[in-house]
Image (tube, rainbow over all chains, first blue to last red; front, side, top):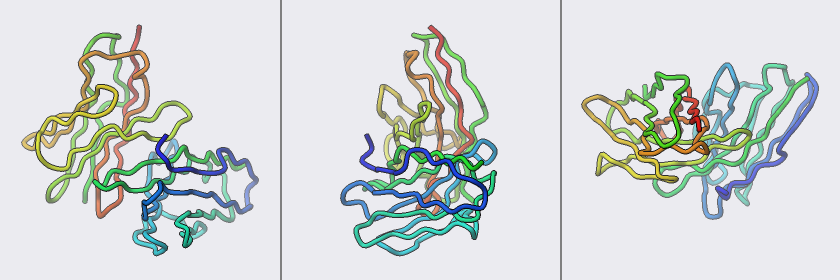
Length: 111
Length: 111
């Protein structure tokens, strides 16, 4: 158990819909990273937050957004969903030596 | 740009034999390198990291990795493979605080 929690574990929705994925980092960690894992794109960095502020952006679509709240949990919002958005979405928090600890992931299926 | 390459999609090894999963890197400056493992339907688990110091890094579950600067490699090794080591292995490098992953290598250990 990494100490990073993610909910829900599975999400099934239809095209055009909007969903919210939730992540809580390990106790004491200020950073949250979001990654997408898909069969064709592999593991890709989406976005990073540090203590409530956006720090870095990767290959994140404009239909996707995220935020980190004062209690340090983070939410990833995915809207106008397309079939190609089906993937595993991971969040991670950063340890003291730059290693990242990953949550169990949310498997999103868009039908 | 920082990147890592995993030249083998799959590695097959018999239980009890030594295993090697290959990774090469391309970075500017000093590399921060990592290995992660992903078991079916699970998140990524941190195995080990190289930041600086000894070229042989020991990690979880009996795994180790050898950093070779002249060959720009960071191969993952284990002296005696177990069937339970069968999983997907990712090499990664830090790029301005986010992880850049290789494409992954599927390790299959046969009894």
